[in-house]
Length: 298
Image (tube, rainbow, N blue to C red):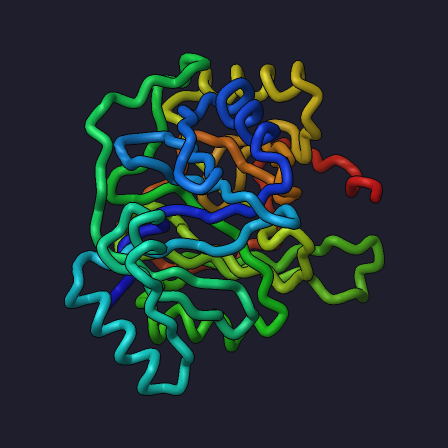
């Protein structure tokens, strides 16, 4: 019943046109109009990886986690319901909008909306980036990763491990306050049943945009550098300059999306061998770089 990958993200938007420009012109995604005013952002052979839907507010609405088949989907739902979790089976129209055979929704213990789905739809037209991005590292490893808020960190971590089959990759304990006596920020990194270092991270910090950030992995450093140049030229907020993370060794920058959460655009992420991997605790987040911009003003 283990989740195999992060399949998609559903994002609410008050201005779909801003996402069209950001997706196509800045980060090099293919864009297509979806049903009911939605926008599909495509980075591989799936119809979309980011589903942007009209909304009264901006932010991540839900994370779509893929189960390998209907049997795994049903087993997962049964285990959740047996332990008192309220699971709603989405109507056929919702499943169709997700390009899936079946979808079920629930909330994790931190309140984040989870969508479980099965049925792998493909668009067999080649991915051709409007900005010349050579491609994205997806396939069986899914979209990339998403970092969610979880103030009740231990309870939420246990939920993803027990019911969705996640494993621990590592964790960070970061001194973010100038006062060394203040508690460190704890982030738990978790992997699905695929080689990506982490598909999910849980951070013990509040957010206002539904997520801390999401990540896409490009195929080359040149793709990353050119995307950074385009985002700077467009006037987007660069939340973090180029750098290399200590845990997954991703070389990346962060740009703030029209939804308010950041998009990490990176390359060269680590793919561990889980049979020999030993989770670690990092006290620094980066090997080099990733100078963070001041928080945005209201």
